[in-house]
Length: 107
Image 1 (cartoon, rainbow, N blue to C red):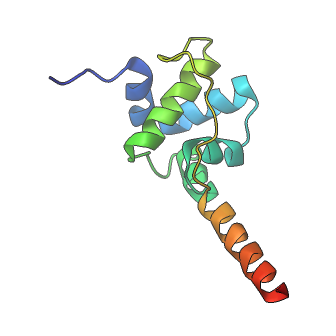
Image 2: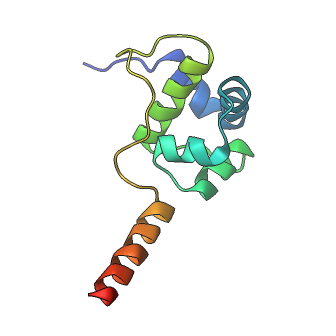
C-alpha cells in the first residue's frame, strides 16, 4: 500500500526556492537554521534557496515540508514541533572532531 505525498511535500519537490523563501519570511529562519533542521549542509540549503538544486533525500524533503506547514500555521501530522535532528550537520561534525582532538592532545 502506497500513500500519497502531502501537498506540502509536493510543493517542496516542485519549487524548493519558493518554499525556502516562505519559511524564511514567516518563521524568520536563516538558511543555516533551515540546514540544521533538515540535517543538511549550509551549502545544500543555499542551493535549495537559490533554486540551484532540489532536495532529494527523503528526510530532508519531509523536514522542509514540516517547516512549510508550520510556516503556514498548519499542524504537523504528529503535532510535534519541528526540531533540529539529533545528528550534527557536516560542519558541526568537523567542529566536534577538532574539539575532541584538542582534548586528547591535552591529556
